[in-house]
Image (cartoon, rainbow over all chains, first blue to last red; front, side):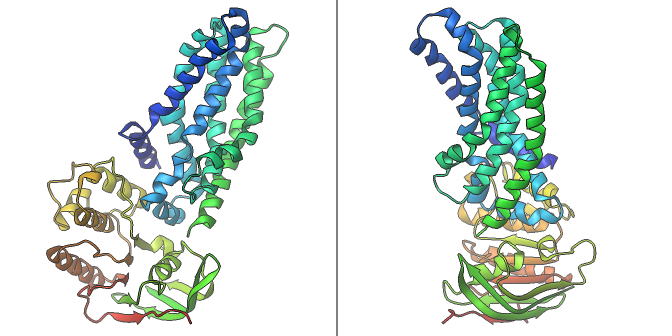
Length: 221
Length: 202
């Protein structure tokens, strides 16, 4: 399993891996918002956490279609599925998800504090948003894996995956943003939505890979 | 170890591709599957591997013990694609499959030497020619031990010398008690192999 993790990380940072595409897309979204919204610093600070979360969510979805498709195209996916007796397929999928998250999504979380400055956010708000992103984005990857497994055979599955996955990510977005606001707006709680966000991630870490494994198993042709 | 198929049928997308296929392979035996394009050779191999469901009949493996309880766990599947990553070096690819498949056999370097690719293990897989890629994929069969080899046109793109070397590898595998099922259009140099000719389903 560790070797699969390392392989996927290596692939994401080598040529054509697309580890940076997400970060650049994230940067592009966040950098254009102040021009569109206007120079109202208070307004920017108020919508900052939400914009960061939406930007990160969309950037997460960007690379998901390649999660299994690249392996399918070169025949590796067949061998990963055949390895089911040695490595349960759901665990293989979980490993691929973690590698995808570490390779493509973790850079977004690291970039988020810098981009928070663009939105004139307070340091504590930036910290809270980065923390919620750190805890919440794996959930998006796990849901996305199920979508990517369903659409693996389709040549242009990217948009379909986004449409399939986006409604399911809404709870993650809601609790992520409300925890981020909870850290800056006084009466709102931080801990409760944050814990629910963590619970969502843990729950989906089980459900997503199992669903994806099921789809991959029956999608082979 | 025995591999037995009785009255096996396979389908793709709900349409029957072949039916009524039967064979029994003992230790050290090989089965060469031939037939026109579209006869279902690749589908048969995928059904045997367990990548496609068995539509009719039975497929069972006997004497695999705890190590190889199912066909999927006992087989190396070499499909049309080589299952190697273009961006990784040949050795990195082989090391990954060695770790992932378990049951270590040869090291990545030894396996490359066996297929005549020593000295280019450090190159990215994408830099290799078609024949060299196929040979690297064949080296993948050697890095971990599996009794059953399922080969889908294994010699496509190989030159004469490599074909000969691969024939030797297959004979050695059978000699050690392995089983081979190969779908092919070209003679593979396996004497005493059973033959299965597939035709279109009428």
